[in-house]
Length: 151
Image (cartoon, rainbow, N blue to C red; front, side, top):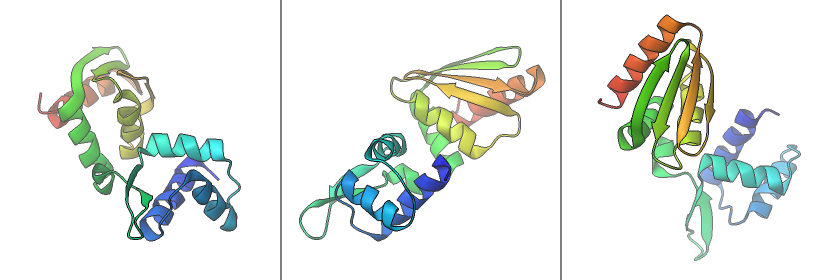
């Protein structure tokens, strides 16, 4: 199973069931026939930025952060408006500088929005490298990203 499919299944589980621990999530996914390890689920939880909220039974359970309930494009717009520091274009490449901790989120959201002009994205802690299909596509995407960020 691909990561995106597994993470979608995780979203479905945590929004319909009370999952308190990573081990509970691993067990539930295994029960559904998805063979996963605790290490994989730990990475998914971090990437998906799951949070723990008070459960009805007095404990805590995993849930999606509030902005994960928005569309991918709306999330991208919010993150860019909050954290975009700089955009630079060179040929087919866009170098984006964001506030620390936001690079991976922006890279994932750019892939999820599925811009047809993006070949790939690479995100680290405070930057994202966007590789476009052409130099013209990079310039146009840069314009669109600035517009989304209200810059």
